[in-house]
Amino acid sequence: MAYKVLLPQEIHDHGKQLLEEGSCEIVIPKSEQKEDLKKAIRDCDAVLVRTTVIDQEVIDEAKQLKVIARHGVGLDNVDIPYATEKGIYVCNAPTANINSVAEHVVGMMVSLFHQIFRGDRAIRQGDFSVRNQYIGFELKHKTVGLIGVGQIGKLVAEKCHFGFGMKIMAYDPFIKDVPSYIELVDTTEQIFKDSDVVSLHVPYLEELHHFVGETEFNLMKSTAFLINAARGGLVDEQALLNAIDSNEIFGAALDCFEIEPTPKDHPLFETDRVIVTPHMAAHSNEAMIAMAIHPAQEILRVMNGERPVNAVNQIEKGSENDERLERVKN
Image: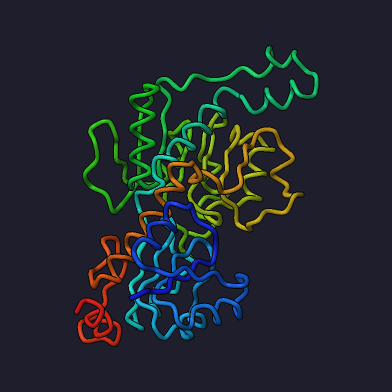
């Protein structure tokens, strides 16, 4: 029996090949516009979604939908409570891109400390003399302050400690067991006050909107940096610009923004003390393959009557979809 899988955005060929080998028919919507999604999803059994919004209105059109599998980690574009109410599994690929993101963060860190970006920009404009002006800092013995020590945060800590000899400080109220080289602290204030670079590794929630703002920048060292490769909206971008312009902090690196795609006249783009990338930390070739394969594997598990390994919700026994899954299994 062939199952239909909606693919609103392009994924790596390895993922598509896996689905096709598992007797799945890939359905491509005309566009990501809601009306086109609603038409395409009507007889689909699964969705492999990247950033397309799968909300209640779209889910209501999907009478056969059994699983929504996310290409990556974040699920803020999926209405998880409503999918659960409808008996639809929601799962993600929590380990697919963690090394890519961690490496991107460390790369930003090196560039910030050694002023690589500023030097690159200056020499392209014919100014070789900045070699005597842009004096960098070594990472050795500096303190990294991590807000969140999940899988990515722990990898950043490992690379910084063993690769550069940095000190690691972290705040995470949900984590109690960390390697001995990570010092867990009780408050975020201590992170902002004592760190030479603060790196964010938390999801975006409404209560964390502008989690880093004027108050936090006032606590930071004037030589310190901020890195955000987590989610846009965590940082008050105007407050960040103000903090840099007033020399409250030295600089920052951002891979994500409150508004994406970002406008080309974004005020932060004007300063050479901020490194910006277009939400691409997870986009290594290896990660793109894993982010396509892992959710495809989850879809095939569900089509075989199994529970996804990385389901973020629970489907109640006896629900409409549970009965549908039992029929698949039998």
